[in-house]
Image 1: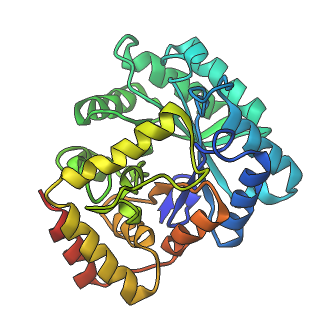
Image 2: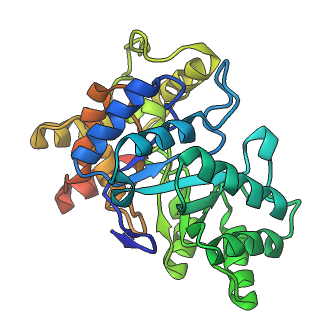
Length: 320
C-alpha cells in the first residue's frame, strides 16, 4: 500500500522483542530475514523494552541503529516508525519532551530522519494544539517525515485532525490501533475516522497476543515454547492469549484459520495477518517473531492474498 511515507510492505515487523527476548545477534538475523523477504516497514518505540528486567528503554531502537550501521545502504530500503510518550523518563506529549525524545530516538537509531513518528498515547494533560505544533516542527526540520496517533479514541483523533487543519499544522497520516480477528472494535468508529481522513492503519497485536498462531487450543495447555520468553511480561502475554479460549468465537475462528492455512500451505498466523491486511484502511499489520523460525511462519503474509470467500469466512467466524 502507498502511504505518505511511500509504498510499504504488506507486513510491518514489530521490534518489541529486540533487546528483550531476542539479543542483538538474533535481532540482526530477524531484520536480515525480513528485508531479504521483501519487508520494508519496521515498528519500534523509545519505550521498548524498559519493562524487561535490566533494561531502561531504547534497547530496540539501539539495536536497529546498530543494524543500520552494519548494513550500508539498507536505510533507504526501509521505513522506520517509532513512538514517544510511554518511556518513563520521556513520559507524555509536552512539546519539549516530544522534541527531546525525537533527538534521543534519532541518536539511538543512528539515522537522520524518522519515517513515521507516533504519539504512543494521547495526552489529555497537554492541549492538542501544543503537541501537534511540536510534531509539526519536527516535520518542518526534516527530522520526521510523517506523524501518527497510537491508542487514540475516535473523538480525540478527529479533534486532532480538525485542530491541525485549522492551524495549518501537520496532520496525522497514520493510526495504530489494537485490531485483529478477535478484537474488532476498531471497525466501530476509529476506522471511519481513518477512512474519512485518509489515514493509513498499522494494527498492533495482529495475532491477538499469539492466540491466532493456533498454538493455544481448547483442551491444550498452551505452554510457552521452551526458552521463548520469561518473567512476568511473558506470563501475562501467555495468559492474554489463553483468555481468548473463553470467547465463544474461538473454536470457529481457529477452524477457519486451519482450513484456509491448509489450502495455502502456510501457517495460521500468516492467514490471520493476511485477513487483517485486506481490511479497509489497513496499510500493514504489525507482528513479530523471537526467532527466524517464528518469523518464517508470518513472512508469507507479505504476499499472501486470500480469496473473497476466505476473507468472508474469517470475518463471519470472528463476528461478535
